[in-house]
Image (cartoon, rainbow, N blue to C red; front, side):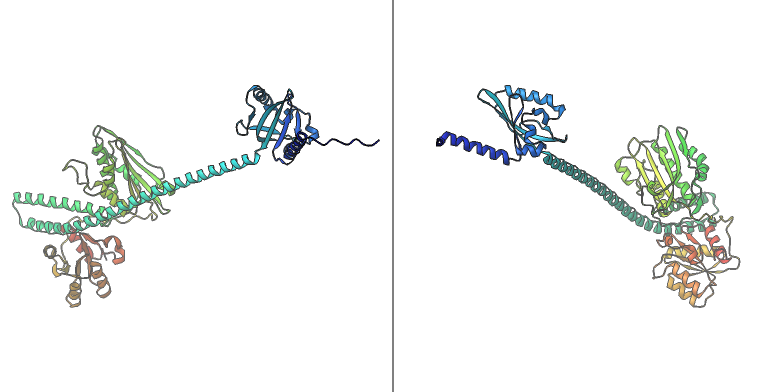
Length: 553
């Protein structure tokens, strides 16, 4: 029997077939997981993307509950969300409209995902269509980006901190440089003033001594004594100026600061008065330091008096010693070791303006007539000239601490200390002294003082003139020469020429101020003494006598 011919498909059938073909193609090529569910949340469609994403085959998943693809801890919450969505009038929710979810692979691993869900009623039955996207790589990239951003922010913050620290360091270094330049300028100024002032004092003291020898009237002698005392005060003032300017040679000795502090305790207690408590914090096994003991004592007394004035209603004064090295130092110690001497008070403290100028010479917050303004500046100059450092820490209402950092002594040997002369030594054989001085007034008074000691005095106004006098063949026993002179030759140059060409002639050098003085070791110029202006008649007598009798050669 012949086959009945099949009726050609209608237009609606062809459209349906085309739609089904298109849907099948979409399901096959879609990278996302596309899953269709019935009302009981059982899987009806499981595309190739879902197979690749979850690791299950289609045959394994068709008819299985959706819970199989959801981690157990999320299933109750997921069912609640699906029930709410099913009852809501909303037909679909797209990716990004729901909170992040987690899905479960066949191998038990979880992964983050985003999902779109839609519902539709067909033939009285409700079906759900889910499109699921694995966002593991995106989350990883976001986490890496967040980590990179965090690391970048930390690096930026760290670099910012480094830059801020560098800026602060440079600002501090710049401020320190400005301060050092200011102090150096002050040093040059005060050193020059001291030089001229010492020449004037030399003339004054010399003439006063000569007048004293001629005056017998008690009233006149009393007036002369007042003038001499005033000249001595002027000499002490220039001495402090030169200490600040670092232009005065110190007499360093190996010291135990603990012993020195303990030896000053009684003087300190009397100086500061009863309302102030004096406390010491002295380190055990303190390193020895090398410094001028008189300058250390002056520094401690100056600081104690300043502290007393800052505590008019009483308080506490603390003197401390410590060993310091390396990172403990607030300055670049160049790998050396230092001994700290600090004086702390619980007084009023300093304002910022006063703190900035504390080490400047002639700067004082005391009432006129109560201070010279040279206390702290002298302490500063002494510390720096001793190859150390000085620093202040202070704030209003928080007291003040002044710290001196003196280098640890490497050489334990004690420097000899010259004892003062008991009486004025006169010339024994009318020796000839050549006075070399470029200041006419100073030269004139020096000639008179030398002759008054029984010597024969000759004069030269410069170094070259002194050399000509020595070359002339005239007998000269001692050359008394100023150090800084016009004419192109210093006293050191004259002494050097004598050492080479006339070694039998003795030399005594004198100065009121000399920048070179701190740069020359007396041993380099034959151990010759330096007589500092303004000097007393007895000091001149001792210097000439010692030079002639070999004590300074």
